[in-house]
Amino acid sequence: MWTLVVDCDPQANTTGGMGFLAIRRAGRFYHALMHDVSMKDVILNTGVEGLHLIPSEKNLVGAAVELVEQPEREQCCAKRWRRFASSLISFCSIARHHSTC
Image (tube, rainbow, N blue to C red; front, side):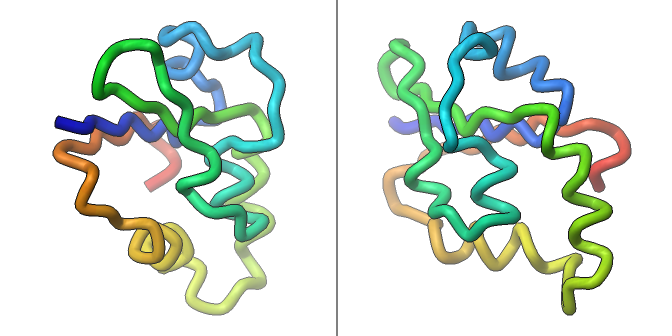
C-alpha cells in the first residue's frame, strides 16, 4: 500500500508536523503547481513504510495571484495531477488551507 499526503497549505503545518519543515529543497507543491516540476519529483519518503509526502511552503500563498492571468487556472492542479497519477498510490490525503479551494 502506498499513501501520499499532499500539503496544499502555505503554512505547511502538515509538512512541519511530519518533520520536514526545516528541510530546504527546490521540490515543493508550489514548484509542481507553478513551475511545471513533476509531482513525482517533489515526493519525499517519510521514513514510515508506504507513507510519502508532497511538502508545502510559504511561497504557495502567492500561487493564487500568479494564476490570475493563466487560462483555465482552475484546472491547473488537476492537469498536473493527471500527468502524475500512478497505480502506485493506494490512498491520497490532501491537507489544504480553507482559502485554497
